[in-house]
Image 1 (cartoon, one colour):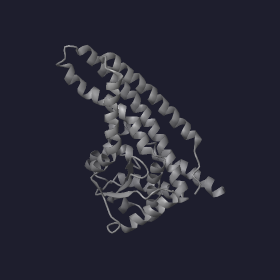
Image 2 (cartoon, one colour):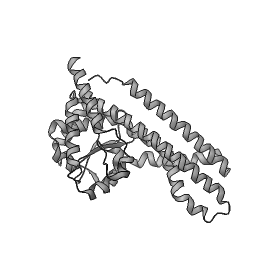
Image 3 (cartoon, one colour):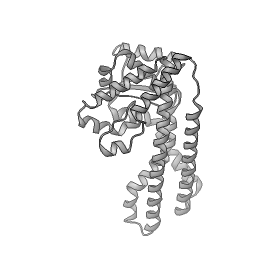
Image 4 (cartoon, helix red, strand yellow):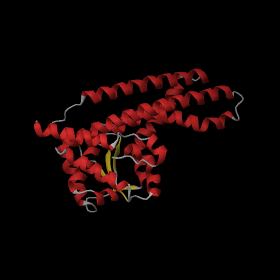
Length: 290
């Protein structure tokens, strides 16, 4: 397998990260000026928060989904598939987790390639055939190889802080004699959160395209992942709405996001399934004529 770099996608991702970095620099600078806080104090606070998010985001993601790590004795075929695909992707074999859910989906988590987990739902194991499942697993391994979980965690941590300021700042403003600076901080944080939300959503879409391409290179079968996307999309309509609502918060991690209602569509972090399938079909033609 030759892991070719898609420089067009890399360029768009780099530009998006640059915009996020510039936005966050302005955000931190405004907070320091408004509250007359020392740079060291702010860096310690932000650094502590980012370390917690970096080291524990995988555990939080698995717990949110109710996923548990499983052994090779429990799911021998799943372990064999992931081990073989990991070798083809030149990756250490990640941990394997399964969530008891009717929603057919999968996701990868972990701070680096040596501390990664691939999780699948029981719904996807029942929905896909062997070839389709391998396409999905390869997509998640491509996320690990591209260090997408780490990149998205770093990209979103200051956005998370801005969100918390917006959500909880008004409680402090109500009892603070110097409330005006707090209200200004809330307003600034709201703008930062909205802009960073749009940028992170764009970055996530680019990384999904990159992971689709990586999956095609790992398996040599772009059509397998395209077929899996069709099968999963068709199955989503049969999943109870209660299950979709419960798991909608994990959209950013999923192979296909849950589009539950208006908010679910607005907050989608993935490109449309149709566009992904179209690109995979084009890649299949390229590989066939290469």
